[in-house]
Image (cartoon, rainbow, N blue to C red; front, side, top):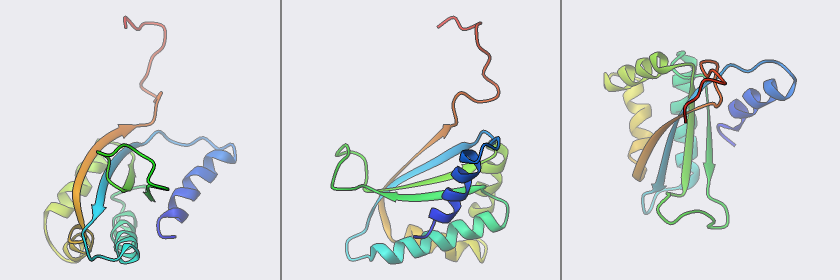
Length: 138
């Protein structure tokens, strides 16, 4: 499945006892547009995320799909997670995609043209390296 090899390799490094760096995770949830192929979408995402990763704009990614219809009604069916080292790397990715230049424009369009009702959020691994313990007021 596209995307899994990247996500699996990141998780495997952690399972092997090696220290995994804290990541920021840019999340996207979306539904497939009517008439679009789910596997064509997965292939397009693999191409787009592969391009971003090959160019050092993201560290890894993972695509998942709601299973058995389980999940809140307001949350779309597909979930894309993109891992970045920090906000600087995410900003580089945004700037690169916002250029609308080839070849990223075609890769972005191949995904964006197949989805609807997209929503995004930024999460971080927690607790992360900047968190100090024992001084919290709340």
